[in-house]
Length: 284
Image (cartoon, rainbow, N blue to C red; front, side, top):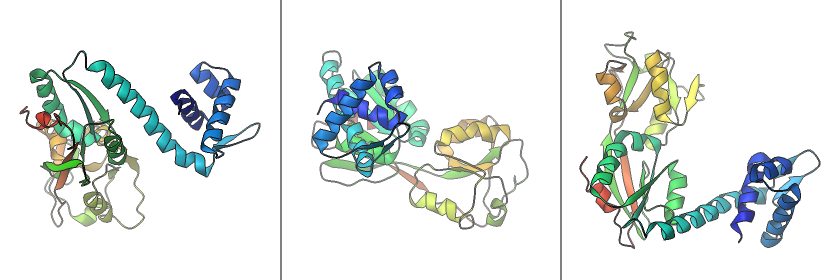
């Protein structure tokens, strides 16, 4: 399947406009229409509903989008790998959730680059997307909060960390400790980073259907808000150690409740010469 056609389809998914898609890809609007018609003919399904003013995905179009993204990514990865082997001994492709990357991988990868001749590509994303890429062989290893046991993959424990409740160091209101009932009255900043049972546990600390004043899916982006004095949040201890030490953030002790330890995992392909293990053996 022609990836130029797939890229045009993905652009139309994004822009919902034939003219804007044409402008973004520097092609004519008629070329966009021709490519979409060819793709719909190939898959024998109508992927878009369109009239003079609106373009929207059909149910089949929504299903096909994930596969199109993976096919485009797979081609790009293959081309990069073919061309990189002449310069580098190996090309290590690492996927990680943002919080694991920020908390544990940065020093590990920095040291790895010092002692290895391998090139490194890092993809930051959500666990489900990264695990798809691992199975499609566009990544060599993934660091996730989800254990993923499947034939041909090697899943092992990577790190154990604890979540701590932090706020601005200037905020002394609960410096001696906080009860769960008091937590529900704070301005809690919710991070939707995938922690499986732990994430569910945090939500259950609050009433059912509780509406948080602020939610974000990138844990590191919470830190500036907390330092500036906006609210409280649970974050991995390793992630905030520097800010706590610098007295920018304060850890609030928990009095009548506690948060489970969070476990992260390393998942790599086991059916090849998986040199990604060299990364794990690097001591930062």
